[in-house]
Length: 368
Image (cartoon, rainbow, N blue to C red; front, side, top):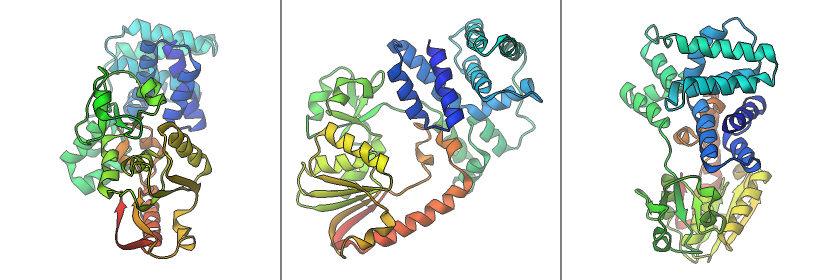
C-alpha cells in the first residue's frame, strides 16, 4: 500500500507539475495507511525526487530508444530509488511490488517493468568517470548543472560539493513554540520534543510528522525552520509598533511577529496571491493571532496605499529562488530555471524601492 500511494503521488507530481509537499499531504490524508507505511511512502516520494537526476542517469541505458509513458517512468524512478538507496528492503520485494502496480497498466507493461528492473540489478552501476568535475557533482547529487555552475562561480568547487551533498541530507523536524498559547518549557516536558540549536523559540520533534499531532492542531506549535525563526527576532517588533509584512504566506514569520508583540500593535500582512492569503488566515486562526490584517496585494504598488513614513518596522521576506531550502523541498531543483534568478533579483529591487519610503525615521526594515 505504501508503494501504491507513492506511485499515485509521483504520477500527480509529474503529470500536473504539482507541488510535491501538497500532493503528498493530500494523498496521505485520504489514505488509511499506518504510521510506518506513511513514513515509507514519504521516504520513497521525497527520495525519488531528491535523487532524480542520478536515477535517470542510471535508468537511461535500459530504456534508450523506447517510448515510455510518464506514469511508467515514475514507477521505474521510484523502484530504482529503492534498489539504490533503501538497502534494508530485499530486491525481489521491490521488483514484485513494481510489477504488481504495472499489471494495472497491462500485461506487456508489467513484463517491461520486470525486465528493466531485473536487468538493472544484474549489472554494474553506470560509471561517471567520463564526466567533468561539475557534471559529476550534478549527477551524483542530482542538482541541475546550471545550479552547480552557479554555486561553483560563487563559492568554489569544494564548497559547492558540500552544499549539494548537504541538500540531500534529511531535514530536521523543527517547530516553533507559539507563546500566545503555551511556553517552550511546558512543551519540553513532553518526551517528543527537545531543544533547538539556533533559535530560542525552536523545538525539535523526535518522530513522525509534527503536522499530525495535537500540539500542531491546537496551535501550541507551528512548523518552521530554525533559520526562518531568527528573522522575527532580528526585526525586534515592539508591542505598540505598526508593522508591514510583505510576501507573508504561509504566515510563519507573520505569526511569529504577532507572538513577539503579544497580540498587540498592528501588523499589515500582504501576499500577491488570494489562495495564499487563505493559507495565512488559516494559520492566524489556528495560532490565535488577533493583531494581523491580511490581504492580497502587489508589493511593488503599495506606494499608492500608504503615505511616507508610516511603519515602525517593515519585513521584506523577498520572493526568492528558494535554493536555500532544497533540503526540505527537493522539487525546487526541478521547478527553478536559470533565467528565474535575474528576474527575481530585479523584482526584489522593485519591492525594496517601493517600501523604503514607507519607513519612519529610526525605524527598521529587515530584508530577508
